[in-house]
Amino acid sequence: EVQLVESGGGLVQPGGSLKLSCAASGFTFSGSAMHWVRQASGKGLEWVGRISNKANSYATAYAASVKGRFTISRDDSTAYLQMNGLKTEDTALYYCSRLIDWGFDPWGQGTLVTVSS
Amino acid sequence: QTVVTQEPSLTVSPGGTVTLTCASSTGAVTSGYYPNWFQQRPGQAPRTLIYSTSNKHSWTPARFSGSLLGGKAALTLSGVQPEDEAEYYCLLYYGGAWVFGGGTKLTVL
Image 1 (tube, each protein chain N blue to C red):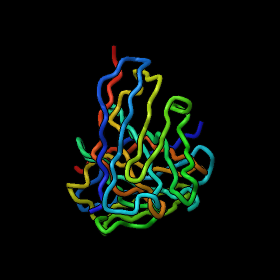
Image 2 (cartoon, chains in turn cyan, green; image 1 turned 180 degrees about the horizontal axis):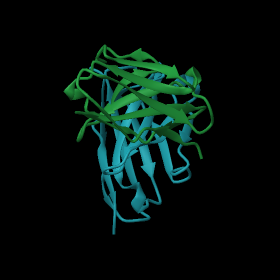
Image 3 (tube, rainbow over the protein chains, first blue to last red; image 1 turned 60 degrees about the vertical axis):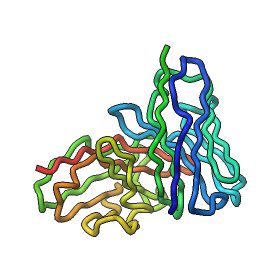
Image 4 (spheres, each protein chain N blue to C red; image 1 turned 30 degrees about the vertical axis):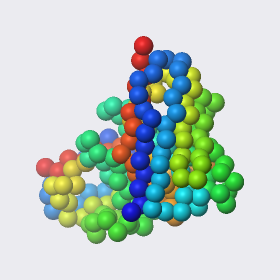
């Protein structure tokens, strides 16, 4: 079964850091680009960023709202989202997803990040 | 800043047909934007219905179809069912980055 499981969310103070994980199983992980998407409570979806597959040298790209603060990385079976300089507006449910054939599948269940003092 | 625009809300009767659209502030949406459409019900993760303009997943009901229409990406639901009441999001590709539309809340009434 193709599956993604996010973890690492929690409560953090403004200006703090947090690292999210997205554990993959059931598919060839190195061949897949991985994306992070977030959703604030009651709001819409926001694309956060992505890391490409091995063939594309694991290149990264980010939304303007997180560029310079967030970093996406990966190892053999997990994608990561390192979040630094967190702001209250980064409070959201964070999802990861695989891009395959220009479509997103599957989606994880999400991990909640709360930035508050 | 690139903006992707969807209808904020639409209402359709059961058995009816409705078209949701997805427009780009940069101009006409083409296949090169690889439009994706997602369905999200309250408390659930998004589910991809359509990818790369018109391709369906194995779980996508036949009543859903994707297309390009009048310079926009479009999602058409034919023979709407009560369980289709949900939020629908489109997503467009901008050469490295992706941008979501604001979502359309579809009410089946």
